[in-house]
Amino acid sequence: MELERAFRRYRIMSFITGSTLLSLFATLLLHQISVSAWQHISWLVRIDGVAHGVILFPIYMIASFLFVMKARLNFLYLVVMVLAGFVPFVAFIMEAYMRRKVFPQGVPARAA
Image (cartoon, rainbow, N blue to C red; front, side):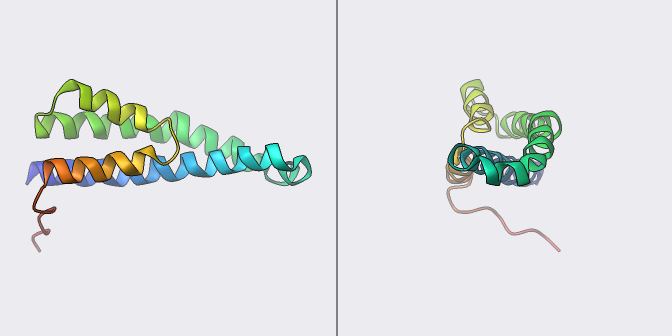
């Protein structure tokens, strides 16, 4: 029960962190393509960058740590999970990998 709750928190934060990182990456890529379009969305980078770096990523690290402790995984998994929050798309891949590793039969359904 506790493991499923810890995984659910990690999964939610992995999705949120990965999504904000992708948004930040897309806006920075747009800046490289078109500076005029960048001028209209530069506020998004300031908001998304602060949200990802100062607020969401520390919460993601805590959720990853709690999940690794509950699942009794090796410390290396925690390092890889935290590093996954820095590279676009890798947070989603790591979440799917951890789901298959910890719950080979699938994540148990929530009790009502």
